[in-house]
Amino acid sequence: MVITQLPQLLRPAPIDTKQFALKRIVKTRLRLIKDQTRDINLLHNHRTQIWGPDYKGFFPVPNSFPALTFFATFPTPVGVNRVEEEVLTLLEAQGLRYYQMNWGRKKIKEIKAKVKGMD
Image (cartoon, rainbow, N blue to C red; front, side, top):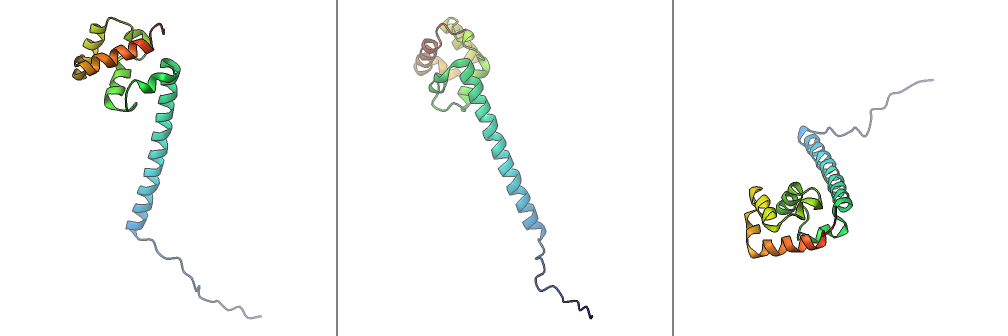
């Protein structure tokens, strides 16, 4: 019996460093997006448990800077049930000065009405 060695007809194409780096970046990006989505869903679940299902109506964009700052300032509805001027002062101290305007005052009144009596 004679064994002959045939050269491989299809050799694997070498991946250059740019392609390798690009694949790695894409995988990292997809992992980060997946992690971010999971974290946002956990955050919404946590807020829904504390503030009730209507909390998404407090702000036009629930993950915006004003919304995140508001919920960081008032982690529970108990803090919002204070006097309106105290609430506005706390928000101004956090960098949300526009709450001193009429829009902000209306928004605070709406939020206070929705969470009235929640503890």
